[in-house]
Length: 335
Ligand SMILES: [Zn+2]
Image 1 (cartoon, rainbow, N blue to C red):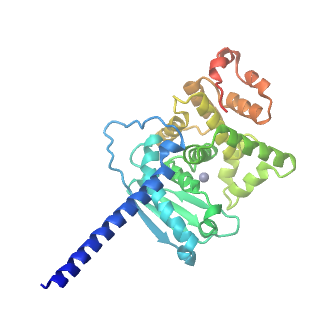
Image 2: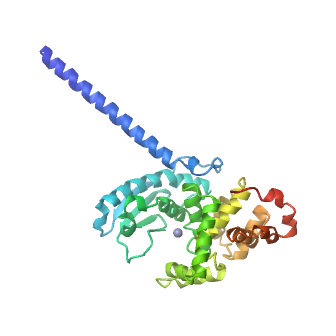
Image 3: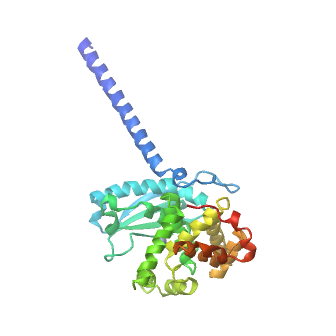
């Protein structure tokens, strides 16, 4: 080979190596940026994951995208969404399965389908989940990036982990847990943000746009009579919209940061449903909370609402005297 030819060859090798190095550094930079954005440890200070006996770190479901008669699959906004959603599922499914102590084996452990479809009507849900399917609707995925929140993906992952009990009478609580994980873990909402939402909902309620009506529109269509009745019978007026129950869970959690109340509730619900011992009643949840934390569902709800309405002097009267005497320690500064 002549000298110029060798030089050309060397230059080419150099270029290939540099390009490879650049692409590696670019991709590792991209990964680290995403890592910082989605790092669960940043979302909420968490206790370390507790592994069950015999558990390994090998659960890595395949994630398969499916397109269902929607050209929107290739719309630029949806294409961006798909990439990010897939990555969030990859990063969060295993993490949440561990944090929630969901026992093996859940349907989504092997494969998770992300199914993109056309919204059946305007105002339909952004996404839904069932077994190992997450359905995303184009009315949501096609919206500009700024208007979307990826917390929805987290919410639906939680529903995959709840498959054992979410379609039963306990739905108001399964929804609340999904909202809690979405907003408190992923979006770092303080109890204050939840309370603001409840406060606004109360104002709407007073203006005649009732939460019950809104709730009815969301949950009582498609003749889901059972779900609808479940909320009505098991819930109370404001608890019927599960975001408010999620706010109450956030409050309970801030009282007992060491007790993993929400994670434990999820596990209890899952195991009770699996063993057929679930009563699906408010009393059942209340007794679980009482055992776990020393106060009941109604006591916590009363406290949450007293804070929402700015009647903080009432908080102490929410609790039984036995609890009340512990209040100074029991109620830390939560703002
Ligand atoms: Zn939901």
